[in-house]
Image (cartoon, rainbow, N blue to C red):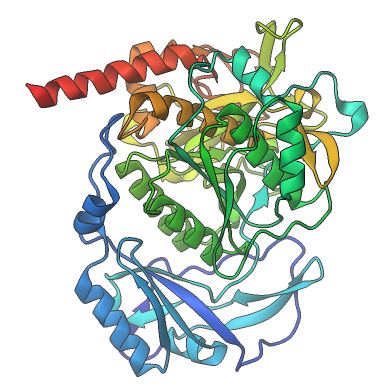
Length: 523
């Protein structure tokens, strides 16, 4: 460690990725960029109730980066021969560029070349260091490591797996989504870390269910863009599932699809850009994640801080809870929560298996756990139980030490591929399940409710769902089944949260909250 430098935050190095192997050294003169995430000028307070989110300009003025912190990073960059590519004080982000050699020297770290599934990446092998004068200003530096940080949370059904599939609007009717609204005037932001969509597929899909194709726009982040691979079983399936589910539930909403590289830097830049877009979205939908134990603690802290920003602005972030049960598919002899669903500022979306014989009412609904996968859920090993969840009967972690952590999921919806969603991908009609379908389903519902509620929208839903007894009664309580270490039961549980929604009743509860706020302002 150089004189005057200190380890940045945790000083941690991300664990090796499954299947990773060493592949030599990184070319020193390779051009690269890093995103420096800065602290808030003042930390946001508790998330607001429905209708109370801060406008972007107000949030930026109160909670964006400090001008003197930005200036210190500019000076640091100049001293180390790095280019300042961009500064966004609202996103608290400064992008620096230079050779790999210059970037590793500047932050006193090391990187190596690795291969994962035949593709080459940089892996940061040493801790990051910064001048002691910048230690409190910098929350994290991301971009030295380019390894994949998440996987899509969808499961493509084989034809023989399908017992009874649904079009998303039919699921919406079963869950009593408010049919008098279509999401007009609202924006749904979708985060994708690979794949792409084809407009012809969207036109064919939406015309097939009797709807006009909604406005769908690709937003490139960090050099990534809409890039369909032509493989229905690849990441294109995730992209099309997200768009088609959200778009068919809220066809009047605009859909912005943020395409970013699958890395910690790409994921963070996409989420922060989507949150702070000039046209504030009603919600974000994220169907990508990974076990907490596989992540860099500084990356999780930075993502959590951006999701707290979303909550302060009244933007709900719907995140898939995982498709591999309470272990999250990780063979480490522990139960693992999926991140970013485990963030206290996410609306974590779990999965059920839904049965409806007539398409108008639910005959049965249980925890999704079958031969195709199982809903994620459980107790975070990283985040303590948040204040808004403290009054709920969240059990301690099943892991040694019985940590009292954030419990997830918060809500649920149909996810089993046996009863999955009809979609069109790369010219092929197929059925896809997974909690990846539940996040955009909930995003569509939020857009419908935001249309009714007006400016301020639904806000940070968890505040209401956990602290309003009436809101708790707006769910179809799932009491049968389990996801491994945890079992469903009456009320909230770490398999399906509060359960699947009754959209009409939930809208009534949120409307009451917004009306009460308006009345208090008048008085």
